[in-house]
Amino acid sequence: MERLTGLDASFLYLETGTQHLHVCALLILDPAAGGAHYTFETFKTELGRRLPLIPQMRRRIHEVPFNLDHPVWVEDPDFDLDHHVRRIEMPSPFGRQELADLVGEIASVPMDRSRPLWQMHVVEGLEGDKIAVICKYHHASVDGITGTNMMMHLCDLEPGLTEPEPAQQWQPETQPNDWKLAAEAVVNLPNKLGLVAMVPKTLGMVAGFAQRRRNNQGGMALPLTAPRTPFNGAISPDRTVAFTETDLGAIKEIRTAFDVKINDVVLTIVAGVLRAYLDKHDELPDKSLIASVPVSVHDTCQHTAGINKVSSLFSHLSTDIADPVQRLRQVAEANHDAKKEHSLVGADFLMDWSKYAPPNAFQLAARVYSSLKLAERHPVVHNLVVSNVPGPPMPLYFLGHQVEAMYPFGPVFHGAGLTVTVLSNNGDLDFGFIACRKLVPDLQAIADAVPGVVDELLTAARDLG
Image (cartoon, rainbow, N blue to C red):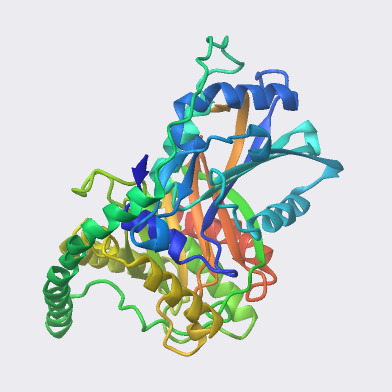
């Protein structure tokens, strides 16, 4: 048994009927590329054999009575692999758009909290006899780094399947006693008073932000100052997804030519496609869009418990600048300032605050905010989330089959109904776009614009030489 940290639990508390806080990944596998012979039963058997390497895949949520404290992870005594791994046989040919529609349907369904919070849908019938695996995990159980680490336990560096080792009979742990959990929560209530100590720290941080602005020292983009766009409103439960890829070598060439970071190039690409999309719809604001950019703090935070170790910074995307090179330079400068100020906040700030979050109040606030559509009644906090996750630089074999592509999809939030997640994968950069279908019905148009924006930046980079 292990208690969720406040940050991990917050992804449960913030979930509503329209705001789903799971993450998805679409893997395209090519069994013909030197891997193992594919059958669904062999695939499922190999996954089951590896479960001891990933104990969290057998854990479920167990709530404390009356939500007096954050819930705990417990091993599911009724764990059933057949519930988590589903086979989908599609009529051939089954192309990219049909696959994107299927991912969107799966992403639109909330997860069953009475079971371990993950699923895999294995899709057969793709063009070229390829297989798709749609993975779905609740954000309470993974972040970018832990999700990648979990995936590595399911992958090998060589094709084919290894000989299975004799598996020990798994016995779930004893289930917790609810009265004991409630008593422990009552005893620990005085510890929640640590919240009081966070107030002066937070006020001092805000004062520092204000002082740096008065001194024109720059810093992060300020939340609640973003312009409103069509995807900044209350979200519905339905999701739409799109995906594309580009050559990582081209991205590195752009980075080197302009002496910027990979993340600067990624944000500039996202800015370019959004600028084109909003301009086409006559919705391009005069002010720059603001992106919330998750930042992993696994290596710097002092907290050892928990799964999600992440902070966030706000960055200007310079969508108000037409010239792509000038936009890239401005994004790089804005990111530099944002990172400097973010480092002053500290890696533990978000986790320190979240551990004091009262579950009932947190959940009630999320439901009221959602039901009253308050995201449409206050200034826009940020326009979208853009996450750049480092992935494998070499070929991987997922349960014996070569990974051709790996497209990630994060959650979307009220007030920011679009999320872009980017993952490097064996020389490619795979882009996953997910949005509220009501707010962005033509998401594929944004994904389709990526190659043109990359070519524009690459041409400018080569012109420097």
